[in-house]
Length: 46
Image (cartoon, rainbow, N blue to C red; front, top):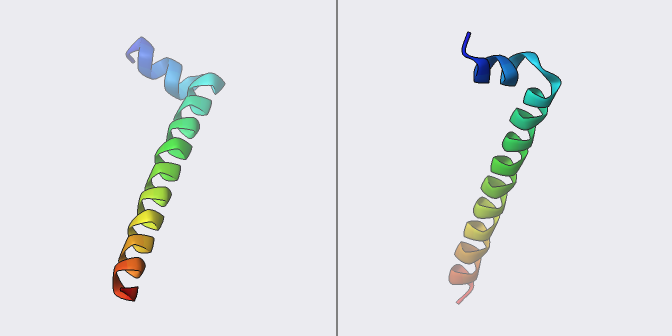
């Protein structure tokens, strides 16, 4: 196995990196959806 993959999949630090990336992308996605919904609601209100 490639050393980088081994580090990511076999070591706790790798799992923390994967989880951290998932949290960052998830937060960005939630914020983007929330802002889009608020903009749509504001345009309907006008």
